[in-house]
Length: 267
Image (cartoon, rainbow, N blue to C red; front, side, top):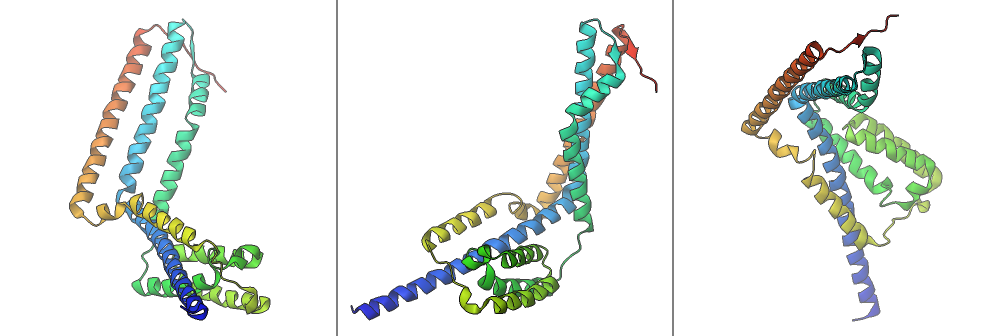
């Protein structure tokens, strides 16, 4: 085989692998966007129940800490300073309060999220594909080296996650302007270690497909499974209510029969 023919085959194989790499990047980013949509759909479907359960769980934890605090004070024959007790327990509960607040906020965002038309999704996907081939940092090594291009790419990725076709159209104009100012010859495809890169992206795709929130897809597409999961969440809610009731009863009985002194600090 001549050197020229061998060189041509190498170039053709390189081009095939480059295109495969591009397609994998596009698939990965599409799956990431789809995962975001699935998370929103999951929260819209089950968010109220999940949040209510976590809120009850937090109340149970707080009540259990209150019981433990009172029991320790009683065992030592000490009065219970209610203000101090509340302060200490609230400090221990900070992380739970933060998680509950974030859950409530996420739930509200999901409820307010609008539906996106198939046409807008199509437009966003086509524009993103064009911009990926021009500017994706894994393809064009100049992007990571140029602050303006990197900022544009960050905005592109965010707009694609939202399926914001209008924003992507605007960004495409800005990208071409930036490229014109820098000169087309300043852009180079980054094909170093392409086999390693392809393997890395394939692994990322497999991870997305096998983990939450993408794994919610099967649940969300099956009405029977959705109903069964709602019933499971409701059963958990009932269990938390019963547990909270038992903790409240135990605390009341302890305070009534333990001869404990409650200290209330007045302003």
